[in-house]
Amino acid sequence: MKYVISLGGSIINPGRINTKLLKELKKIIKKSKHEFVIVCGGGRIARDYIKAGKELKTPSIRLDEVGMRATELNAELVSAALGVRRARSLEQAIKNNKITVTNGLFPGVTTDFDCVVIAGLVGAEAVINISNVKGVYNKDPKNKDAKLLKKLSYNKLIKLASEYELGQGANFIFDLAASKLASRTGIKLVFIQGLENLKKYLGKKSFTGSIVE
Ligand code: UTP
Image (cartoon, rainbow, N blue to C red; front, side):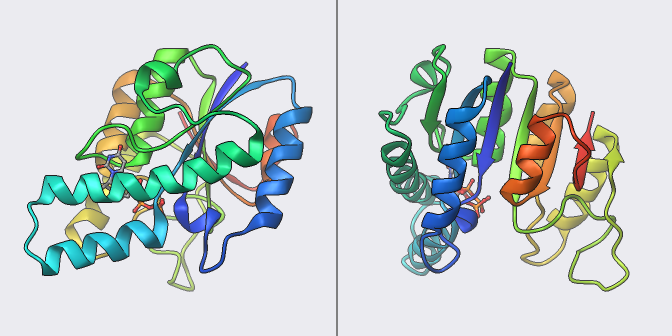
């Protein structure tokens, strides 16, 4: 089976590059019988550079290109750690390899969106989003009474993503465009925190997280 992993930049580098996590990810992937496409996000570097570009009145689409370069830097490190060359285009990212590592591929979207496109083209079982929250919550998980949704529909995900998009600067776990594309293409989305849950999910064991299908 093939899985697409969305590895956010804030997971790769939450202030300091998380080499422990990358070593563990390498072990899991090398041991697994499955095939993986790992799409790396840009995280704080992307956000800092985009913020600077905005102050410099740079056109928005050029800022996307700036953000993409940050995703490339992370993907270069992750691909080197996993002993593969970074896939630099959609064509390269959908080749049938055991391990593929890529980055943002088209200006104007996010790596969540890229993951859904790739998953559709390679016929992946699911997009697995690894983030720093347990999964999808019914409201901003900063709220104490926020509840983790273990299973939800595409429509619920789209509703939550739209609500966040209307809010000021709030960052939802999976952006609206990617959520809509997942709904249209019927790609299963799995949201987890931490590699223990990744192992459990891949091993078909009970895990903590959310499934959208
Ligand atoms: P990310 O996908 O990393 O954004 O892309 P994110 O979700 O905010 O960050 P993390 O990594 O999950 O924490 C960063 C920026 O790069 C540009 C967009 O501007 C995006 O906001 N980008 C990324 C593209 O234009 N195209 C892509 O395919 C990917």
